Length: 413
Ligand SMILES: [Zn+2]
Image (cartoon, rainbow, N blue to C red):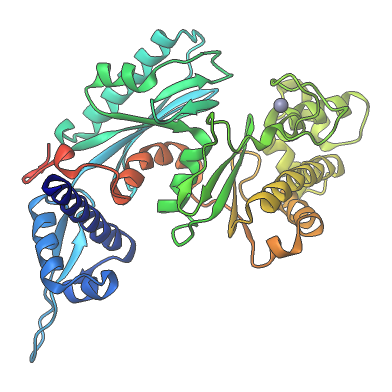
């Protein structure tokens, strides 16, 4: 009984400690009185937590403004460079690695093409070498690195750190965390690539003040990350959010999942390029004809669309309408506050986003579209790899880490 009371008290101490850390992360610099008002904790409790966070080197004094009369409260701020985090993504074309501080500021970044040899041991050797290179070139001491976050495409078991099925690599049940922890001697968290993009928006993007939103990613595949009441929704077998496999055209092309006409087969990067090439061969009039011999890129289609090339405009608008059907389903099912669109096919492209929004407004339930915001991400092309590192940011500020396991009073262990 006494032991339970002790454990409860310890749990409460940890929870308050992370609460204050999180408030300082989200609101910038604050005084002890501010923190006491926000948290409803007594001033002596706040003082005790502040002292402890200072001992852990997780916060620092902002200084005291010089004034002539009266006392000016001392403010505290999160020490963003108290520790660093590594992010890694293993995608269908490349392996990326970044090191960020607690503010998400990039300290160093490198990427390599995905090797043609997809053997797990071979690929993970490459990952390990890349991480070691990023650490060495950043000049950051490994003892200041909290951990490694990995964003992996396909189905991922985040509890056990296992890549269950990444289709582009053809792996099955590869224990990613275990293998990389052995190689790199740092703790590893793993999650699906769409889920890490969702965490990136939650901590560094457009959803900082939102705990109910969905990120839809469209590039070589189509997927979504779903944040419900501040928690990622994974699904029983970690297959939640697979909006790319929503059937939108029963007679459509065959999908990698074995079905026909999945959303992904109609709007991913290859679908758009194949669709354009097919129509050009059929004799459709377009400025893109002159580019056919060298291969047409997605960018070529967007440039042509801005020059009022009708084939390009129609292709993008059709993709927008199909994606609108997918977003509409998500909006009806989860009733989120925000939808964030990201990925090579979607970022900032009004030719797709306007028909997408029109379709959602026409087809989703009115109760669910009221006050709904549909926006494109502004995190740029490193959102995925920053998001992977954010697996640790999320764990830290949500109080999921045992502080004594990770930190010594002189700083990180
Ligand atoms: Zn499918």
